[in-house]
Image 1 (cartoon, helix red, strand yellow):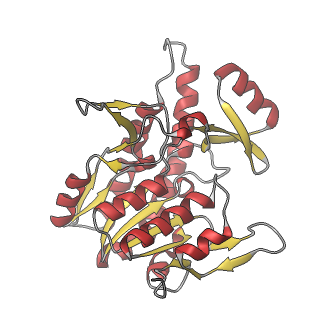
Image 2 (tube, rainbow, N blue to C red):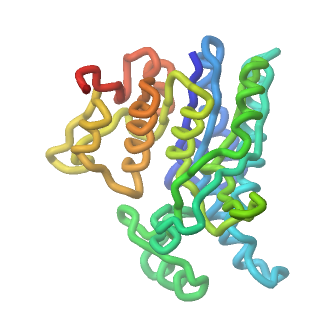
Length: 307
């Protein structure tokens, strides 16, 4: 079975973790342990978030006195793809001796007129207290909004239209290679209408929506979205909270989920299932094997009664 795995940013740097290299390496070890059993039995394409990492790089870039201006987000996104891809690839080499592993830096095409550019929603970086967050908004020109009990930066998140390197990914898979790609949703680019030339843009594409699009383009059988909760919950965090263990895309759509957290995950899963007739699931990283085998998580399946 061909599986696209979408790792949440918290799989590599969890809320409250110090953004140290050693901390991220320890989290990568945990990721690879969770995925190794799947990799033995299935074709895997691994994508990952980069919210904490790109936020850290953006902060460092904005504060660097040697720069006349901070590096743009699309460049920082490329840096995070290279860093996280290398960490994952090295651990996977060690866990899967003899297996071909490739970490690709990939680009995601978006529309220049996407309304998301005027309405930032994508969280990046760490959580701040209110006073520090408002000071950063003033000094850096950032858009800051509440995230749980704290405050975080948000940036534009245009919808992915295609992955530029899809054919390369397909060829690597057909050669038996485990592929790591589309990290952080991919480097966001727009194409010139006349020449097709690509230009990077100031945005971060949602990694779950990119993972769903990639899964569709490479004809995957299963989209596995891994996060820090065991399944999808209706009314999460409220006294009326209840787990959703099995749902069709239409049933998920009737519930409604927060745009900054579970919303993109359920949207991505539903979109993949609707467009391909395949299966998707959302659940906890450490239960990845159990989720694929129907023993954990939330399964999103086609509505067999539709039509």
